[in-house]
Image (cartoon, rainbow, N blue to C red; front, side):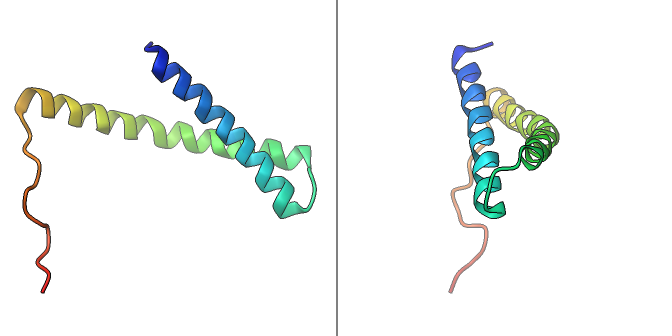
Length: 81
């Protein structure tokens, strides 16, 4: 795997952990290990569900753009008056 991708993965995991701990501490008014673990599990499940389709879609767009020359839109989607 590309070293940059591996580094970004580590940063994403650490950011998730810091966020989960910060939310537990601020919202609950104190630190609870059980709540922190529940947040980590919820965040992990969300990443497992969201990341594969998102990455698959981005890789497919990249492949289509590279091989078939997808043109970018040059005009707006909606008319504004």
